[in-house]
Image (cartoon, rainbow, N blue to C red; front, side, top):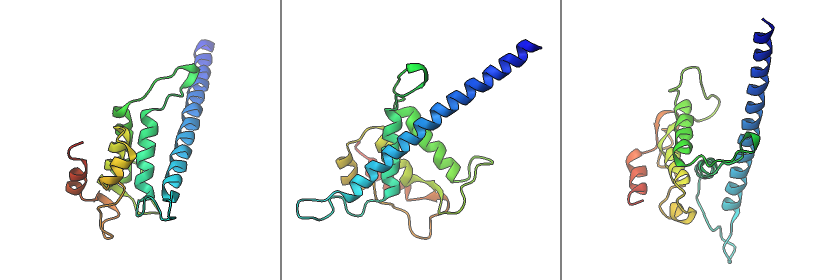
Length: 168
């Protein structure tokens, strides 16, 4: 029927519009997170030394992206809501599950990838809004994994990550 065709077209247009809004917001959040990563890795003390030496850019990106997702507010039709810690953590967990090959038909190829508890730790402190300097002091931006453990399941030492998070 014509009604069905019109509804199908409208549904497709709506889905595409929502998809574009989400894609644009995702791009904005990723750029913002990367800009924060670069600011931290280049920050210097008065004497010219790096203020935050030996931080891992990947873990910083997880921290800032999770923080950005927690406070994401730009949604379609002028509605603004804060996603909060739960959805932010869930998105980090989904990303790690995809990296670890735990989601069928989703594969990460061409680089070291896997389910990383280090990444989840950085996601946790970002999503729960732990102050950056506290997370840095706890060592949340240094990997616990060994060079031989950079692909597949179980990246990182979950006990070491848990110890970093204790007393939060």
